[in-house]
Length: 267
Length: 348
Image (cartoon, rainbow over all chains, first blue to last red; front, side):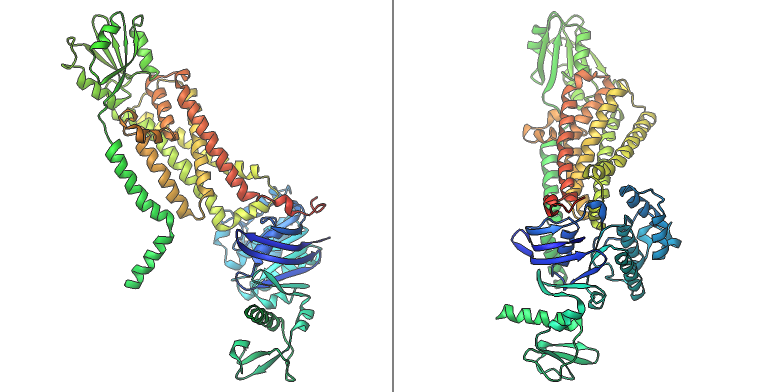
């Protein structure tokens, strides 16, 4: 089963948050949504969680019992312990409060030794793991995660992605937004949003092939408006192509796409 | 320093609720203390009973606002009228002329007592203060304070509980979980209701034991009134939470709703001394009716059929406030169009 949106537009009053978005979220895969602040990532995910109705277009969602959602910032109910959080979500999902799934998730997330700790007393990474566990608890068919790894340490990020990848491997359709492009490369499909519109979409390997022109590596950029830092050197976009082009990464493609969109907008 | 002052002014200008609190509250206090804060009662609802009722009623000074004249009535009739709050003064127009004063309306009673001496054209009457013979302040204030404490607990604590979910982002999590909106709403309100009931029992017991306040009426009537009142104040708490994004905003709004309740409900200043320009606000406040019920039950053993208007008004207010609160909370939990967002055949 594939969930997703077709021709989606979302307007908040006179402000357009999303326009012309097509996205398929197949089961057993991770689909990543990336983009800068205000690109429309959270709005798209909230549409996919059934929290924001579309102004136009079609949305295909499973029933709420088959949907897991982690909002931005949320990592469980702060005044409940880890175990109580899981028990509450299990009860709401009509599972037995002491379902073996609770123990399984506690073990897999490394939260087993913190089961009696209040959620508000957990570290950022642990709290996010709890949030993802709560979303995963009812074994959803669609898992929607809004920036699950933002603001947490690299080890916790890696742990979380293992957890998310395991869910996808078991057949869950995963839709995750991220501010980190290296994380998007783990996904089977990437949708890059810019100002509410699709900038680039496709499998990460194919997306890098869609780059218009060429990216070169230089010590001093000829046109600073088309250049960005990469380590101690610069990368620069040459729309007309360049024989000295380097193999672009997903980050390069996203930057070039936004530069190209900006140039079109200015034109 | 200039930069700091400019920054504060800019922030203040955009924080409309704080601005409203800074402007509305002083204005409210001015209005309250200017027009409302009057302990002297100029018109005292009066009933005159007995064979000479008409003659005596005609001789009473203007302050005694004669509303009932009953030639066939007796002292028992006058007492009953006072118990039912249909009058504050009952004049038994039979020799010896007796004036009964409702001691539960302290300021009106004091005002009446000042005028029952030389001001009356017919000799020295017998004056009896009923229900609160010592004109004890505690007997008047403690029942009303029960209402005020419940207002604080019901409104402030409930609103904070709901807003905390919004602030932590868990309200969205609840909205997506397979819970019906009514499960969430009832589940959210029920614990606060139970805590409110326990709170009410504790402060009522403390009031009765510590301040020696009499309880003469029916516990059932008191409980029925308290339940309606709790529902109204819990509804206000939920309503405030749906209008607030942060706990700070919720507290500001709660203060803005509590202040008029304390000032205008009749808890401190008698309603009869308030001009109508302000008094109408009193009749929109749940605490006004709860105080009428609770003072009636505690001090006068007022029967439920005499409390029809406060009960009806409280039920109406509770229904309106709770309905509004539930509708707004429901909107937060189940955004309109959610069903339209589900493609045909997608939902199980």
